[in-house]
Each structure stands twice: as C-alpha cells, then as structure tokens.
Image (cartoon, rainbow, N blue to C red; front, side):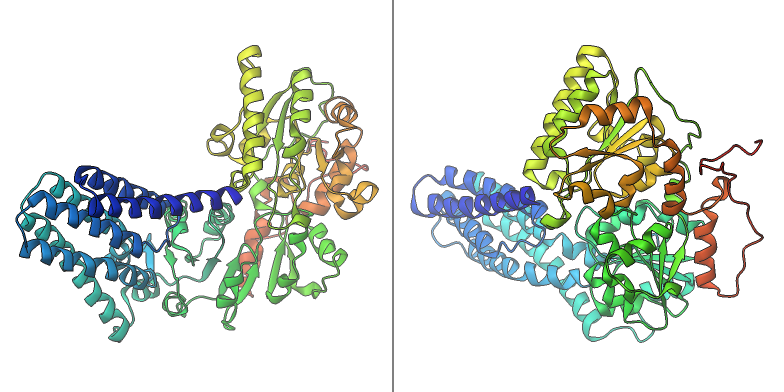
Length: 571
C-alpha cells in the first residue's frame, strides 16, 4: 500500500510540475516548440496519473496546459487576433470545467455485464478525461504544424457536442426517470434472480468473489453479483455467466435488488455491507473468503448476519475464544468447497529425496497486530530448502507488492530461485507462474509440504493431509499454538529461525504429527465424505433459498482409523 501511495504522489508531482513548466515555457519564453513538447509530455503524464489515481482532479493542470498550447498556437500562426482560435479557447475552457462534473455524474449510474442491456452513458462519461487529454494533444499537434485554427475548433466542437449529448442524457436520467424503472431493473426482473452475491472491497480483492462463483453457479438457481466499485466489474464478469451489476449509489442498488431475491451472500465484512443489510426481506449469509486463525476471522461484525457459513467447528470455537458471543443457531458448518479438487494423500510420505515445497507468505495486513508476514526472514528458509534439494513454489499474497519493503523482499527471493534454477535445473515457480498461471489448488497438488504464515492457505492445505509448517512472526512464543490452534498439528518456525533445521527435518523427513492432522482436518474442514464434499455447502445454500428443501438422502462420512486418519473404502 505504501508503494501505491508513492506512485500516486509521483504521478501528482509530475503532472503538476510539467503543466506549470509547459505554461511558463510556452507563454513566457520564445521557445514555442519546446513549450508545445513539454505540454504533450504533461498530457501523457496526466494520462498515466489517471491510471494510477482514477479519481484525480486535474482541472488546474488542464487549464495551464491548454493555456500554454493556445499561446504557442497563436505565436505559430502569427496572424494577430484569430476568432477561430479564440472560439477554440472558449470551448476548451468549457470542456475542462465540465468534464469532471460529467464524469462524476456518470460514475453514479448503474453498470452491467452479462445482461442483455447496454448503457453507453456511464461508459462514455468514464472516458471523458481521456477524451479531453486526446483533444488537447491534437490541438498541440495542430499548433506544432501551424494548421489553421478552424481545425482545432472543429475538433473541440465535436467533443463539445458529445459532452452536451451526454449531459442531456444524464439530466434526463436524474430528473425524468422512466416510470417503469430503468432498463437494468427491467432486465433483472425478467431474469428473476433468487439470490445476490454482494461485494465491496479495496482494489485487488476480486479473488474474494471469484473463489465462490463456481459453487454459487452449482446451486442451480438464477442469481446476480452486485459490486459497489466499478474496477471489479470486468474481472468478475469474466468469471461467471451470471449478471454482474455495479451500483455506486443506494438508488442504483434499489433498482438492481428486484423482488424475486430471497438471500444475500457476502464474502467479507466491508463497511458498505450495511447498505444491503438494511433490507430485512432478505436472509443475509456471511461466507467469508478463507478460513484461518487470523484475528479478522473472528470479527464481531459477523453477528449482524442471519447465517454464518463456516468450514468447521474450529471457526465457531474461534469466535468463542475471541470473546465474540453469537447465537449457535446462526452458524452452519458447510466445509470449504474450494478444497474439493485438492488431492488427498492418505499415507505419510517421509524422507523424500527431492521434495516440492510450497511457500505462501501472507501480506503485512492493515494493522500491526494483523501482520503475520514472514518475508523479512524468508531468505533463510529458502536457502535451507535449496540446500536440501527442494523444488520451491513461491506463491505470494495478492496484496504483497503494495508494500515496498515486501516487494523488495519478494524480488530477492525470486533472484535466489532464478539463480538456483540456472545452476541446478530445478523447476522452481514464482511470480506470475505461481500466482496467475496456477491456482492455489494446482500449487497444493504439485507440492509435498507447505511452509506458510498464519493464513487461510493452511486450512485449505489441511484437506490434503500433507505436512505443513507455520511461521510465528509475533511475540507469542509458547502461547502461539494457543492463539493459533491450527499450528498445533503443524511445525512452528520461530521468528529468529533458530529451529529452522529441526522443523525442516520434521516437515520433510520424520513427520511425527501425521495422525494428529486428520483430527484437525475434521475440526477445521468438517466431517463430510470426500466424494461429495461440496454438497454440504450446496445443500445449506438451497435450504436458505427454500427452507422446506431437503437433500436427496444421507451421505456416509469417510471411514477413519482409531487415530483419526482416513482409510480407503476397501478397508
């Protein structure tokens, strides 16, 4: 996140500095060509700032750049007063002042994907800033080529006409809405969705939704996804066939939340969840986006939901351990459907000569008390694994690179893996190869052991039955396992790495906690048969949609040995 702030500050400084420089050079010196060149550079920088800071207000900078370009244009023509150039100046000034309000008004409109309705107004409004930058660039080029001023005026009038049409449409939508509702509302009423997946989160969080979409589709009922931030619309729409709507305002939400809806699912505790929770006619169900012993996994805000779907009894115990009192009837144990494709290893694999180890460092968190990131000490672990002949899959958290220090530490690990790969030929994976080209399930299935921080990855890994180690990056010491019970069936790496060799021996060679893991697996992930594991979630979701619905019949749980480890059906 600090890295993101640095980029935003740099973009702001460059845009403002170049705009001022362009005006000074073009207006106050005789270096017209240089002034126009700096103006174009300022416009390019402004375009970059719009990517880094989509909400950036560049009115002052646009006025300075436009003024510099027009002064340079007048000098290049050298024809005295030119009415066409004066008219161009007036149109450009109007556009600079209107683009921001029009864009803001368009941002309040509902947007859709995967729905047979198209609305050009919000899309065009969102691109007005880019259109203005292109127009100013064209005027600068016309000035540099000394083209007649009417060329620039024609381009400015064309853009002005488009802005006028856009403004009229926005005014009509605001002050004279359709009596029968908007086209999006009508299309959704025809779709008749029975439940909605509601989502609001910081940038980079789309994975919280996409992990649930395949299972929501398997419920077999029509539904929609409602997001509050427009940046999530493309990625989520590409991951599902269901309609996806972006509702920036409560008015837009009221249009999208049609009467056929009965249940609202949530995947986090975002502040804007309250905008949907206000609707008492819906049953509100919290799904979460992972199961871990992190403090946020026992958020007291969970109590506001009608139902809390949890992976296993451990999640219920976690709330009680944190002092959060929630009525027992709100909890529904449904397992963790995302683990269904994870391959289960029923027999311990000890003493592997060339193991593959998955390392999944988490991010630094929003607050210091939620910082479980092991990247500051990771180089020691990686070097020890390489010395043991391990192949490493390094899969970092999506938020890792937002912290400059974490990004540097991650880059250092990538250098180590690249150097070892060149030297030994071992097929290490990192970067996009481990985070985009492979899913977490792919990484788990390729690996023999896991080293992770306190995170939801450990819970998912637990389903495989394979050994894992957890890093203790806090000051809990002997109380670490009491605070994070999932570490009790794994091997704990101390922050100072004083026990790294001992832990790696247990993890890769002796694995003394093999049997303990199976009991932990049931407590964290539910006691459901492997071959129909996801049905627990699907049954629970259908029951919320139709309280009288019953599953087809009872399902036998997996057969287990006295020590808690699973037995094959033939046993």
